[in-house]
Length: 105
Image 1 (tube, rainbow, N blue to C red):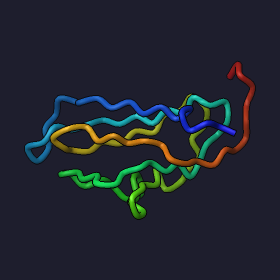
Image 2: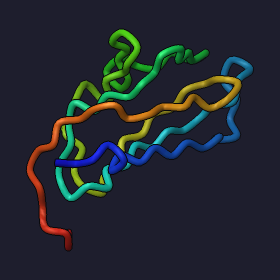
Image 3: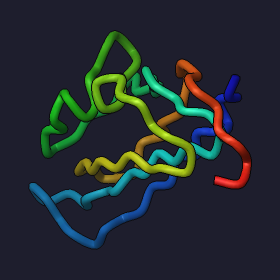
Image 4: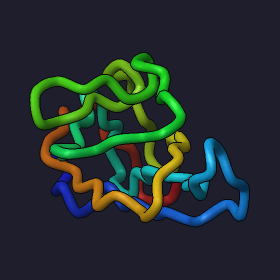
């Protein structure tokens, strides 16, 4: 089973501006040796001035489902972007652990 802290979230300001707001790039990195799916991030209060495709980040109550729950393999990265005055503190709150792989992948 993968601990939640195995999902690393890195956000960077792209330097681009959309609707007068900075564009933020979010990378969700799977640092576990196992596949993870159904990745949920806390996103209570999240707003983007540029709409985020619901297939990429689907709001469900106070949480958001990442990439429609697809499988994120070890050492792979999911990426999305949003426009906002400041970065939003996304935090992984749950995932489903799948197949585990050798540490030397």
